Image (cartoon, rainbow, N blue to C red; front, side):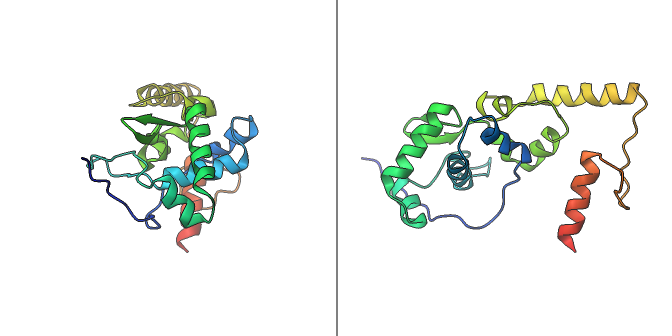
Length: 177
């Protein structure tokens, strides 16, 4: 007999989201409603790699349905759709997030620098270590250096500066004001 542990809905903390996640809707992989439910599932997963439940969605369909005022069958249907699409997967009766690292801060910072990654590459193709992405970033930086490209990393005005790093820094500075 196994004891089922119930975890309360989590409203604390944060997850970094690549703006590129919206491409899942633009290229007709997901509807906007499915994207919202997908993000809800991701936010209810364990983000601590030290835990045995790392990347597992800890809340069940009934908990999520009750919390968000929809039926458990609707949550179940969305979960099955997301599994069929490859965004979630089941293992030993547990729902896990495919490419969970795309929601971890350090990985997001690296991925944001690679302009040509498709939403399929990011969210649907399982990649445990993202070493391919890291080598792509290194190659991109090497090509930029060979062309004499120097990104401005000043914390001053970003007018005319389109470096992704500086835009992120500007967004962060604006948020902290």
